[in-house]
Image 1 (cartoon, rainbow, N blue to C red):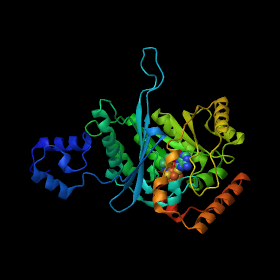
Image 2: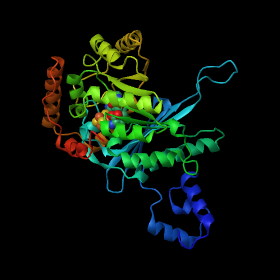
Image 3: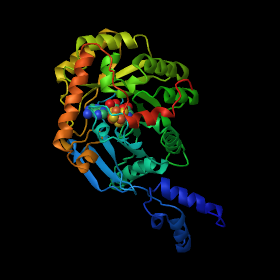
Image 4: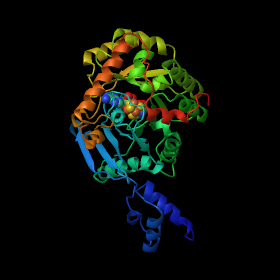
Length: 391
Ligand code: SAH
Ligand code: SF4
């Protein structure tokens, strides 16, 4: 702030990033006149938190954040207590608090198993709106510290609403603030950015050589099926996505993780497992298998636990590292975008019936091995228009 002593900048920075202040009044000890000036120039907090759903016996907290224009986004805080015993008596797996954050309100990609996809695209988030989700969660954890328990956020994953690589400038700014020791101070190595396969965005990241982990939402190794499950595949098919991810791993030396949501009878057969092994064989890669969270308005169900275990074993036999990820917050409807979808209200019955019909028709085409003749939705076409495949 102009005309202020230099230490004020540090006081404000510490108030915002260390104490996660909500208002200028919480930034101690600023003079009243300066607070008033700050309030005229800035909003210390850009998001609210008006619905918190707790599940998994208190280990998962899902927050719905209304933005200033009424758009709704979600973040999910997951607690992983320490477990296992190492030889030195310390836990093998340290306690973690992972926050899953949103990068857009809604999403244009429209994956049919995703509640956010059904909502459609709202808008890109501002950098501050991305970061304020993190500050909110850090503030919620703070009382635990006062209670004598050393709780702090250990990981941040861009796996909430939206496609981070279609809002990449802001996502990069947010990651820079998160990893800056003078600001949030979380190592970039504790950040994961997940994409449904925006190839030019992946290439741009590779050039920047970031420290965070890149996750690719694959969900199918064959184009006909992936055209249905991740409609962006009609623009950037599997081979291009995996080639970009492979180059990323080679250049950065960092392992790429692949997310694979398991849907019963759709993408969980032995043929799918073998196609996935063949696709990733020899790569610096790891597959996370995630049983589908039940969401409204799809004809699909999660694969059975036995099927998931079998699929993982088959991948390992094929030489691919695979982990089964237990999904969190199911009992609270905490799959990505579900709270916002509930708030948006039930769509009219004919719209729901039509959606199911489209999904079933497209899946049948895919099961026959044919590629989708469907075009991208208008929103998705607009969203990818600015991305040049050869950048
Ligand atoms: N748009 C990005 C990041 C947000 S989605 C992406 O798709 O990668 C984050 C993850 O949640 C993705 O892997 C997505 O496929 C997964 N997801 C969405 N709906 C789900 C559901 N119903 N069950 C399980 N995982 C789901
Ligand atoms: Fe968008 Fe990711 Fe949901 Fe697909 S899974 S609709 S890309 S948020």
